[in-house]
Length: 130
Image 1: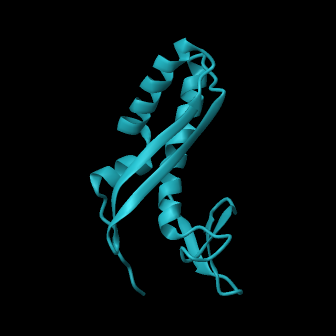
Image 2: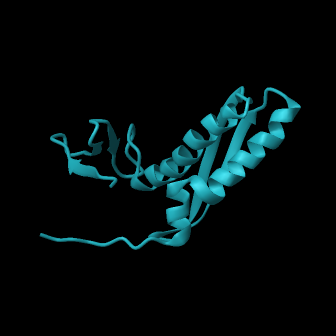
C-alpha cells in the first residue's frame, strides 16, 4: 500500500511526508520555493517514467549520456487538466542505443509506469471524513 501524509506546517505552509521520512513542500502555484499540487502530479508522472527507463535501458547495455524530460499539461477547465505530454530529452551513447531507448520508453509508458497508467485508467478517488 502506498501512503503519504499531507499536513499544514507551523509556518502556514504544507508538506507531504512519506513513511521513510522524505518530504516535499507544497503550496499554491504563485508561491516561491514550493511545488503546487498540479506540479507534483506532473512530477510523479515524469518520475515514474524516468526511474524505470533509466535502469532498463542500462540493463540492455546502453547507459544514456543525458536523460531528462519535460512533463506538461494545459488546464481543460479550471479544475481539470487536459492531456499530459511527456517529452524526453536524451543524449544517446550510440546509434544502436536509440532503438533500445525508444522501445524501453514506450513499454514503460504503456505497461510499467503506475502513475501514468492510473491516470489513463481513471482511478476513483474516495473521500473519508472523520
